[in-house]
View 1 (cartoon, protein in one colour):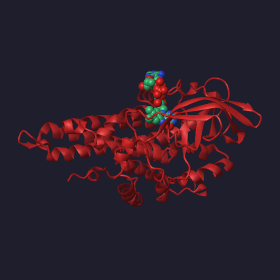
View 2 (cartoon, rainbow, N blue to C red; view 1 turned 45 degrees about the vertical axis):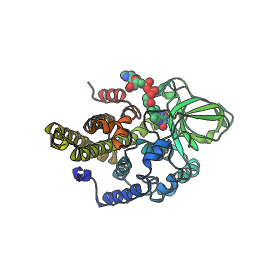
View 3 (cartoon, rainbow, N blue to C red; view 1 turned 180 degrees about the vertical axis):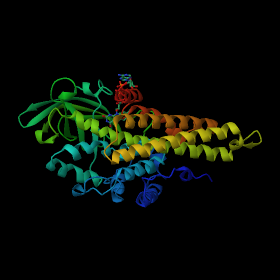
View 4 (cartoon, protein in one colour; view 1 turned 90 degrees about the horizontal axis):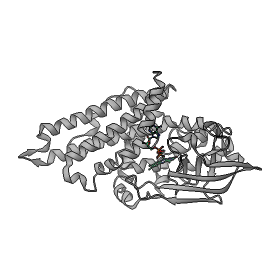
Length: 387
Ligand SMILES: Cc1cc2nc3c(=O)[nH]c(=O)nc-3n(C[C@H](O)[C@H](O)[C@H](O)COP(=O)(O)OP(=O)(O)OC[C@H]3O[C@@H](n4cnc5c(N)ncnc54)[C@H](O)[C@@H]3O)c2cc1C
């Protein structure tokens, strides 16, 4: 039996602790998630008790400050978590279960103590949910153009506008929302913590989508929602920087997941090719097919090595925008390549629902668009090159 773990490159940055964390997570995923994930994806949701269960093994609290219930962990622990969840081959799992990973950091780094105290511990215990609400119908890549407005009114802001494509939006208790408090452009944007049960908040599920079925995605409507001024995260009109800071972690997480989805495709395709026979021999014995596997592994390894160096740079506080942008582009391209090649090797069987590869194939685009699309990230990188 082909063992995908045997293809992992030795990384000088990963220690025995990271290995133990992987083993612990793998046991958890094999017991609590893997047997059910296909059904959850078909049903279009994850069970509510998955959050407290994940909290029970420290998955949600990893890397957050201990005074708020966090547990110590470095960037490689976080990457191991992304990898082990990705082994299920259902991207909605990571997107939804770990969505606090993009919604909490602005609060952790820029929020005041009372707000942190109220929100971070229950999220890390898996008792409450928080989502990140940046995108609007008229502003996706062009974040600086967002129009959802928060107007000061006494001791509150009054929020009017709409957010869309919000992961975990139906389940969220809070939104870390980007709102316009000032003039046009990035200098007029603030981050505001909006309670989802505040009068005037409405949401609509966006359930008909190509992939990520078990992850809820929602449009959120704010119609005159009063939000206390204390819920401002950071300074007024200075919300753009926390949004940008957030991207490194998100992009590293997506890249790590995409490398692992690529490994899953490689594994499934090899297993298939070892037992499927055509023209009197195993599919794996045809040279054209064997070369596909070599090409997949070649690209996986190149991307995995880039990921390790970028993660180490992030750990040192030195990860540049160009590298994390290009890493994410490379990771989604390798995922696209591996999903295509694995589907091709599996022939008609691969086209039928029920394999991880088929699911991963449907989830390529959301990774290549969310968290910064290929075009936007290449442009960001090119601008850093000083051409
Ligand atoms: C399933 C799902 C979950 C999501 N979850 C969240 C979430 O939790 N929170 C959140 O805030 N957002 C979320 N998003 C939104 C996501 O971040 C946006 O979809 C993404 O930023 C792209 O924005 P857009 O869809 O408006 O595309 P657009 O910005 O309209 O871009 C459309 C296309 O044009 C290209 N393009 C745009 N501008 C340029 C340019 N200047 N030059 C060249 N090409 C360009 C883009 O690369 C893209 O290919 C989610 C999206 C999906 C699909």
